[in-house]
Image (cartoon, rainbow, N blue to C red; front, top):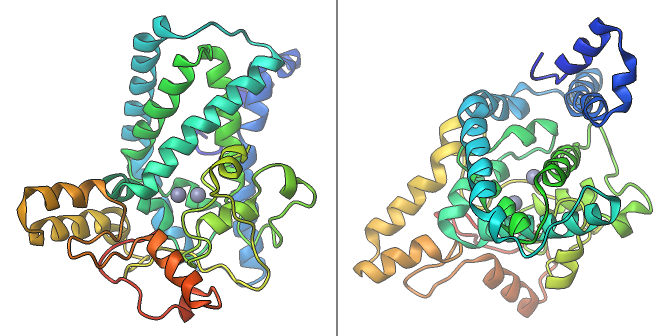
Length: 334
Ligand SMILES: [Zn+2]
Ligand SMILES: [Zn+2]
């Protein structure tokens, strides 16, 4: 019941008071089951077209079960703590109106961009985020593939930025709800939505197509499209990338990984980092491994995403990951 998100709807149906559907609570209760419903539809379509492979869904679901209780609990506590601590320091106060919603959403996207950018550019945070990038097929179950500490860390950054910028808590929760729903929908895989561009919307907002690009390990696509719904910050900071017809998306991360093994997906990057720290000479190098982007090496032989992109441009490579030659095997670059 909780997975399907229909308990509130059932309560309304039981009480017979359908007027409640028009309240904010009622609207939220109606939208909540959409993603779980789409996930089931995606599974059924995959089965129907005989493309269903249990392996494509198994690991994210195991992770979902592992995360469910503990991650939620820490996240809610972290959000409450940030609001209590930072609300008195807000630069001004906003109210629950449509224009403040637009303002709040732009600020929220900025917070999301910061959290997500760090998740890709700081090795320690990449250890938390890589669980989400490990799946080698895109489908709605990828929504649940997260390291349990990632949500609390993301929420601390996003909530702090929003509260300091004056976004009031009810508005913030509303934005979080839209963000969560859209953020889930953009993981709709090819089984559900063949062309993720959504027509003209592809020009205005961030679509499943953009997020597929984000999950790709092709050099051109790596470290792009960090936003969730409004991709203004990607366009402003130069990390925006459209899906190119001639470059087929290859999902996953670039290190050697067994994407069907729960432990490799969940702890693999930590093990790689620990190995790099162990072999690094001197304390400074050890700390740099934690803070530098994935692929950074104390030997100067960096295989970070930006170095790979630079080399690719230099060599006029046909932009395909498989054509790039030897890729790093020990560190995750994404
Ligand atoms: Zn990411
Ligand atoms: Zn994603």
